[in-house]
Image (tube, rainbow, N blue to C red; front, side, top):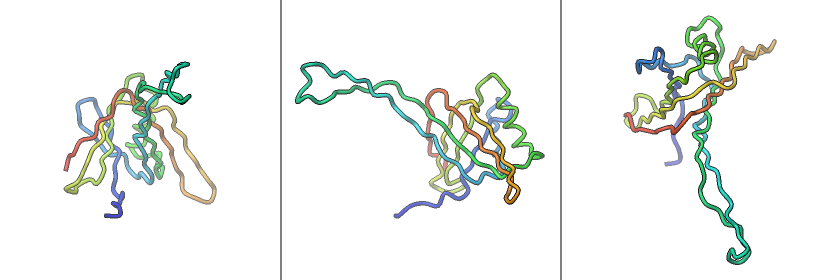
Length: 143
């Protein structure tokens, strides 16, 4: 198989802390989680063949980034403003291939670190939003 169509991928937010997730409307682009891991250098004077040596360090859950066709009257877009202002972490989901047999869901807790709106004179309004993941994101088969 050459690849799968990403159309329909969703970002959902826990709307009230009870595990009731609601999809953010009008997402045009979505990326992440973009996980990473630190490498710790342990090179010593007796490292074989003068090559640097490393061990595994801490992992970072990374970020999720979305771009939406912004509508200031949309309640899911207004909720992002509230999420940015709150001090507590919120639970989110990225649902890949929703409604299909191979549906998978990334679940994570996070905070919004960047929220920016664009109003070009010759194009649609957009909002870009970056979610910083706190802890480990988990991927589960949900289809």
